[in-house]
Image (tube, rainbow, N blue to C red; front, top):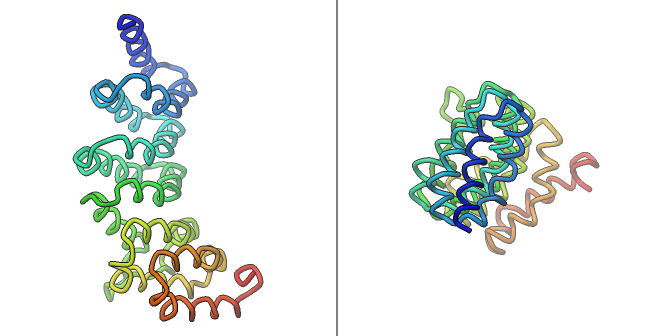
Length: 229
């Protein structure tokens, strides 16, 4: 049985250098399923380094596949690995030369930050999220400076960021960003917030909901039909 496992591992390691791009992409997409039967030691010692190699693959489709797997992979590793290796990979994807890899990174931000909740890595990701909108001269964040894709995904991932931290940082850090997005001139950004306001209410509780989110809800009800419905 051990011989079979060793042969399987050998074949998998060879596949990371396969000349066919789709094979490397499929290897990434199935790496977590494959790892389930190999044990944690094999995952940390062999599969994780292989994933790191594929994360720097010259083909953007392979790198994008790595981004899509990253949240699930993050759940499987220790806090130390998250803080020193996984977050570094996320930051690497966020700086990728491919637009599609960067968009996938933003799309997966919510599930990824939830996977790091309670670790120092989560705080690093919060800083990344808060400044995703780019600071203006005054030092404040302006969503108007953000491209359409990024602005929408900031709004879409907001409930996940709030879930990762709870109401503890609502007033100081998350509410100011939420308030800016509520008045964003792009209706898709506002609609995303409108559709998720009930999720935010569950997290921050009835007192803060009544004070901070009820006025927002009334604001959305007066918005265009795409937002108010």
